[in-house]
Image (cartoon, rainbow, N blue to C red; front, top):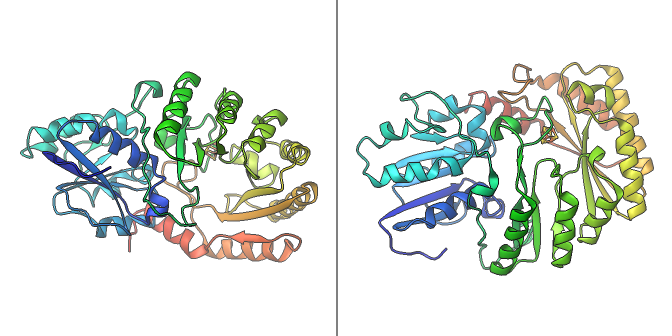
Amino acid sequence: MKYRKSKWTMDLVYPNKSYGGVYSLGLLIIANIVNSREDWFCKRVFSDSEKVSSKLVGFSLQYELDLKKAISMKGEGLNFAGGPLVSMNPEMIGEHFDFLLIGDVEEVIVKVLKEYEKGEDQFLKRISKIKGVYVPGKNKVSSAFVKDLDKVPYPIVQEYPEKIDKDFVFGKCLILEIERGCPFECKFCPLNEFYQGYRYRSFENIKKIIDEGLEKNNVEKVVIYSPSFAHPKRKEILKYLLEKKVRVTVPSLRAELIDKECLELIKKCGQESVTIAPESAERLRFSLNKKVKDEAYFNFIKMANEVGFKKLKVYMMIGLPNTSEKDLEEFIEFVDKVKAKFKGQTYLSINYLVPKPKTKFSEHVFDKKILKQEAKYLKKELKKIKVKLSSLSTAYKEWEIIHGHLN
Ligand code: SF4
């Protein structure tokens, strides 16, 4: 948004590079709400763009490793933060900011702005009375929640730098959030703590966002934001996008929810690959409360073959509580079967479980030694497939930071 003279200004910081930050929906949502108020101007700031200059600066905290950078980018006035990381450990993150916004920002941001407009005197004390605003030392942690997503404003205009390069993975796209939270409750996943439950936008509202979004932005594709693509009208949404003749990117899919027609629609919308996240073999997967049978994945692969997908991305996890030698053997067996069944190219990513606070695994200890052994064993045994293994030291650092050890 072009600078406009205003009485109050706010900078919204994504404490990492712009090629990731432009896709932060949280930032777009707040900027849209702030800029729609008279007398306010809000701009987005990334670690590789200009510096912060406003007296009120907000940070979107998505990843553990961004926290240090965020702290180094703080402004000289009031600094606040929100985002998934904040919900996981507000007490720790609150030590570094004047206040935090927890939960759905649409519920609280206007109330905060109204208090700011009254003057800085006693501002923190006044906003400490708002549900979803945590002011360290002044109130207890609480969380805000939007029941009906159709009733809150959506950032229709989504801007990009004029020149973008290949690091901007989605190119210039329209971000389309169809749902928030997830109807499933995998034990390791912090998402439902952040979103406080599953809600989805109505199909009518989604169609309106698509119509206006495509009209107002010069974009090449629509990227669907949705943790598990569980929306009851997911096929209708794809059909509608297909009519609009835009390319579409869908997120990782729950194998048991997707039928052949849905896969055909995804393919027709121009997506070349499909992603699934079985995490582990069946026994361990069920112990994570991810109750999807191996058979469901094999059936999914059969359909993906029939539809003609050429790439399959498979996300697996190691370091899960109660992993036995047998589980690791079954892991290999499962991956080998997936690879054998899929006719195109299979890409396997293995990530370490980082036990997050407020999940069922919050107390689980990240044991580097055990993880190293598991990774070594799997790498040795998984000969038939190229494996992308995440960094053990990075995962360990994430675990340390989110549990309060920043240095
Ligand atoms: S299905 Fe995905 S988003 Fe939903 S709880 Fe499980 S891991 Fe989290």
